[in-house]
Amino acid sequence: MGVQVVMGAMLQCSFGLAPSSLVVLPANKILATTPAANIMDNKPMVNILPFGMCQSMANPMVAAATAAALGVLTPMPCVPATAAPWAPGCPKVLIGNMPAVDSTCTLMCSYGGMIQVVSPGQVAVQNG
Image (cartoon, rainbow, N blue to C red; front, side, top):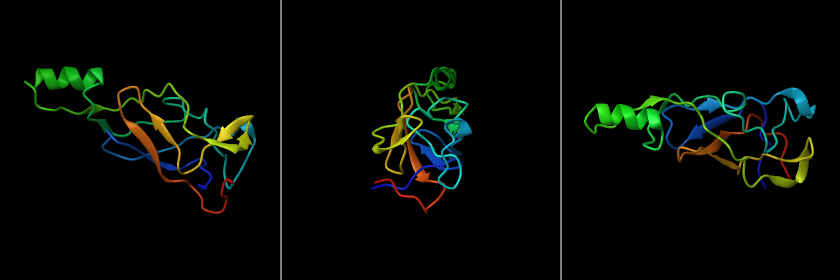
């Protein structure tokens, strides 16, 4: 059983050099301590903000910069590419008719990174 993830939760990508915070728009009108996230809160640059610099060679900007540097890994600015929803979600708790996101959920970036919750943004509400 994980802790409910809300607006301001700290996230980390396995290829990012800095943490980021989750943005949850108040559209679903469900609050834990602040707006609570569901699995569809996965939109790049809306819900998922950049993680500083990206080190993934699957990222075309990193690959081009690395090639230009004669093979020396050259991180480039992170632009998240998250197409799939958070997984696995918490099907027992629905927010806006979608499963809630808890602290055990992960989100995959199309460039190969795994985004995980470092801090859920609150500690008072647990998902069953």
